[in-house]
Image (cartoon, rainbow, N blue to C red; front, side):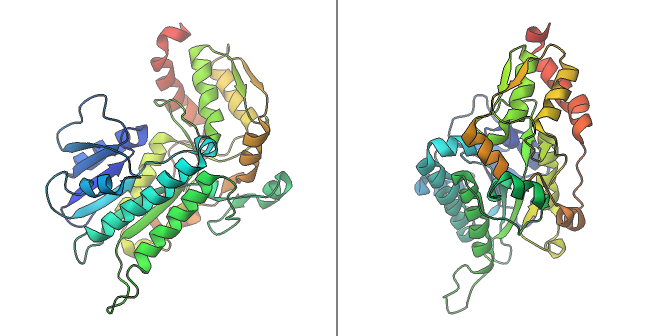
Length: 345
């Protein structure tokens, strides 16, 4: 996990599943954690965690995070908080304020409260929403995309994530570049572009890729599901446990191993029809039909069919544990069946 000084580790969006899954690993590594979220925790965090409830749009609140354990340096920031794609389209001003200005507030805090000679790690989860293919033919012709290709997002969420990547690069390379001593490396910025994430434990919450997990959760509850994309819609996915593993791996990698600041990761790239078929195989009573929502379908069509993640595999030995079949058989179906046991009996 995060390396460097013995300062605090800040996790924003700590109340989400990614935060809940990540924080035990930080505690096991002996870190002192500040768990920041817009909402107060529903149950107490374990020893080693200080909760901070507030809005990352509020710069004054963000500044308090560094002192939740008393005065001292920041060792790392895991900036998980964001307004997701569909929710962002309904309120683009809010999405910009949270996803861009909130990110800048955290970068500024990390830059000013790190230990001299040990720039704090800033881990920024980005998204395939930064890509933008102009039409379905372009998407199919492009195939799997490298990190530098087709960076023309069509959602405010994608724009915000791309801005966050660029802001992180600025703080890592050009911060205070007009000072007499020249620019300094203020943060150790690292970013992962995540595909759609399939989770057994958290209900979907506003992402345009949520048709995958929504389909599965509805089937487990015995409810019909109307999918908002075409059967042939295809984007990459991975499981939540693999997403946490990716965060751990990139955070632990020596700086000398990193050839870039922003990395693709992938695992499998099924069509919506293939997801529906596998859901029905595990839940034979599932009722799934397709009624594409034109605007949401257009967003999915602008995202790549898959990504090239050679750099992550080479630099920090990324490899997913779940392929499409094992994601369902070993993780999603057992956990979801247990969650909705009353509904599926």
